[in-house]
Length: 280
Image (cartoon, rainbow, N blue to C red):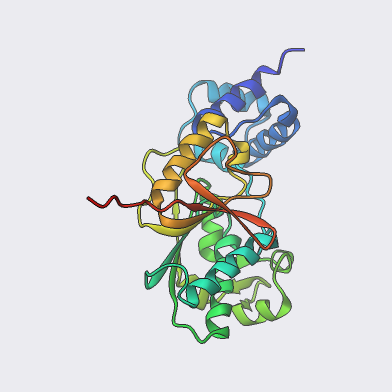
């Protein structure tokens, strides 16, 4: 049976805008997300949404489609083995065995509602205290979703959200409860983090020379062509010897050869190969 024309239309639109592929096996998920758009934008049904989209997807509707299309599933310290690997690397930096730079620059390239960036900040803070280190760091969080970024900037989370990944001591040390029963991240964390809207399909990437880039659970939704383009631009944003951290089920096999594969604490991370200067 041919694929429903409405689902075909939106799946092609999302792929063109974000590079994300909704295959026919994901039609149920796409259908649910379109129904969410119907409710949020006050359409009568998906058919009316489709008719409106035929005239052009612009303004608030475009942003809503892109927001809802992305998978903003996240949690604090999601996939712990990657944070154990990151902890291993930060300890090396504190001991002077990694980078010569005085400030570490970290990019959370699909930051969603902010849990990943905050987890990174908590981990570094804990290690700074453990080793009495004066290590300086900054974190850039980017995402295509305005809704996700708004929540990330507010840094306010429900009880169930903070319980997903944080220990009770971490909650009490780095968050306070407000009068609406929301847990608010301390300025001791948020002062290190800046958020901005960004589509990883954009031509221009930040070039601050990052030491670490977290780009987790993004490539898994991309076509091979999009993966290669994104990886190439991520590489250009890393310092020589910088680290790329992907998600579970993601790898560079068959995609890029400019990284060294490293196994740390049962997690695979990728280190950008350092350029060898030729001596005349």
